Length: 292
Ligand SMILES: [Zn+2]
Image (cartoon, rainbow, N blue to C red):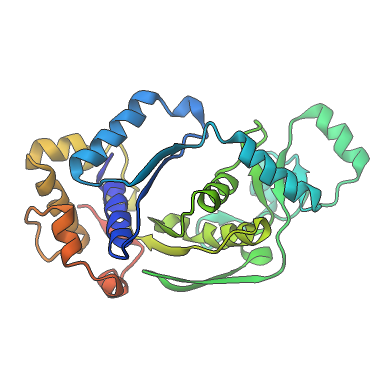
């Protein structure tokens, strides 16, 4: 854990609690090899220590294959899924970078003939893409305000199952949110551009659209996203420097502009003075917050 994900977790906690909601803890361990159980235990201890309590869960993703498969099959049955044989290099060659971070898939494999598919299957395992419509999806984010995307132009057909057989994050979170009753989603600004894709899948699978709040990213020097290398921002270093969980929360709240000072404060105390409607004003320069 580092200051960036503590900030995102704190904001989730405040935004949900301020509306009388319940926090669901979900461990997104689709990639089992990268999700060691010692890390998962540590994350839960860290949340508890900081006062970031949860009311439900933890839920996991590594035991949810049946649900993801059922959703995948229902999209396949409607003719909305096709295999894609493009390599990473093909994708970069065929698509233009868009809105800074996302590559728009050119639809290269959308119209392959059944023969073509058979021949290529023998050669390499495909990923599977969901066909998107030429349609605009709009939302009003609790922090970022109005946001919209034309799926065909800004996004392109996107991967819902990877070539190694794992279901993609996009599919897993939509199915989990739908089935676990998650109707308020608070997460980093970097995922705002995925939200219209997920809203489209919610429509296809018959789930309600959730309320969204995308929080600014906390970045290190040269606008790099914080990582384990930023020792000053790592939770154990923060605890060593500031001594108590309240002092760490207070420091993060102060640096990110959530509070006017960096005085120690508990999550409960922050909640008492938390104003959900003030968030867009609180984070006017809303993409990044400098840790330094
Ligand atoms: Zn392709």
